[in-house]
Length: 179
Image (cartoon, rainbow, N blue to C red; front, side, top):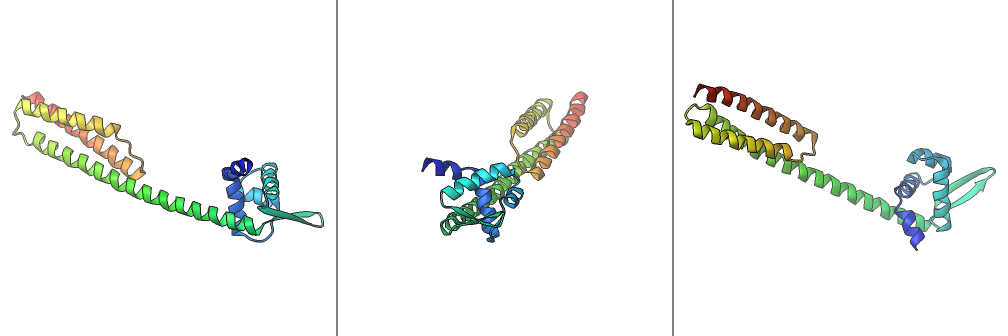
């Protein structure tokens, strides 16, 4: 059973089986190799092991060897298809949840930045209070730089927020020079 486990936990094996399930006609090993983007000898060896396990069967017509799934092979491959489908759905959901999370995080940073900007540029703060706000802004910049954003659209928002912080810091410096 250990050999079968190794075989089934090889992604190329699963790709080969799924390829054969999509097109149920008997196929040439060379065509399967092209479909899964692998070299013929590698696919041939996998098919040989699958045949020994009773997952696929081969037969010759003249000089040409054809491969097809057995009944048991079809059942197993359908289970793999279902697993991969569930994994795709799970991955999509995780990605959507992560995207929502990142938007919430970035919106919180944006609100904090806007509040500090409003206070700093109002001209109503004493020098000491201005320094405190600049320090808060600096902490936000550090936190934001360390925040791991995965989606491209949110990475752009992060970059924009960092630029806004730079602009606020420049404006705040010029205000502090006036004190």
